[in-house]
Length: 437
Ligand code: ATP
Ligand code: MG
Image 1 (cartoon, rainbow, N blue to C red):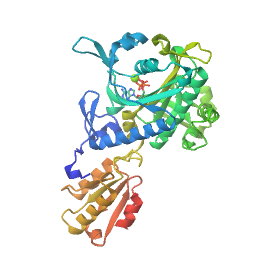
Image 2 (image 1 turned 135 degrees about the vertical axis):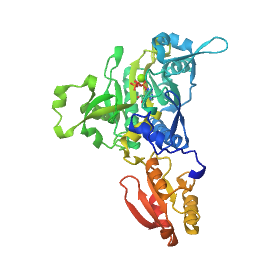
Image 3 (image 1 turned 90 degrees about the vertical axis):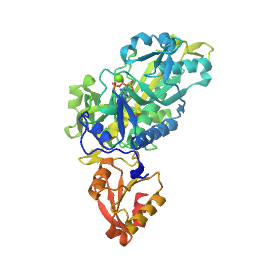
Image 4 (image 1 turned 45 degrees about the horizontal axis):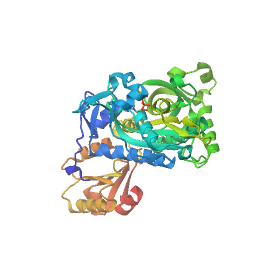
């Protein structure tokens, strides 16, 4: 992509409306623009990041055996009346009437709709278990949308739903999702810690929030450093083995981790002082077992092995895909801008032509573009001073910067900078490209 012909409106000044780092950097780096309170347009760079996160989320859901589908954003009110949530949901729900005065709503979540889809077609225990997910926009009319995409009104969520014949099966589904989540967050370069959350009237211990540390988090959290040292991608844990999943769940629940509301001073006191991690936390995901809360009132029953119908055991599993863009920035930035992890960066490399019109500089840049491919390099071919290009490249945070100046170019050499850490090296074009990969 060529910056001179791209919609990447970087800002030098810090926008006054942004209170937290990620929001400031997302506006300054030209990733998003607000179109109404809590509603954002994703500009080309931001959209690339969003899609990268979505891809990683999707790959890990698929690896856990979940099936992707796509449910609509607009839902009929009747479904929500069946579960009893139409009234309960209150003002956070955006209610709409169509031209026939039918009551509709913009979905804040999809338990009712997925239960309806399942009950239409699934009749026997032989068709279970199933986990289904979609990655779809949600609308919640939050009282106080703030912090940019972290608490928006319209936001992108991955929401999965599990259906099992019995509690034992539901537990296995829950653990699969927990493993998928830890793998997802690790690939995003985040240290997200599962913390027991309130299960409400259902009880039990099967609800976890996944929380990352960031100074602007909404709650105080405490956990044992052990969580940061586990390699969740390890094949010591397989989705296919109930024993592995149990061992994994044991590992996740045996070390101290708690939010403010659940904090236990005595248990915390037993964690070695140098192993204690505490700070403000941001919730990036939430998983929940809720039994027959929806299947029972909505009449989703399957015939069991004994022929008797039983309401399916369900769970739901959310990840804030758009919130994660902000969360990754909160976790990875410095004074100059964003420092994208390789896995989510909009482009692998920024290419800085310090002297447009210089035959050697132009030729090297065209060559680098052709060889890396338009999908992997953002070519700063603007008519700007070198200082502006350096500052913008740091701000936008691509993992690599390939700097092409007239002196080096004359000898076929470029400067390669790693954004994280800032190391620079003068290399041949070949070596620089090999490094960028
Ligand atoms: P919160 O306590 O932050 O309001 P929630 O408990 O309402 O979250 P869930 O219904 O569990 O959230 O939604 C799943 C995920 O969707 C959350 O973990 C979060 O990452 C994301 N999410 C929820 N509300 C918003 C929002 N207003 N803007 C952006 N992402 C959100
Ligand atoms: Mg909420």
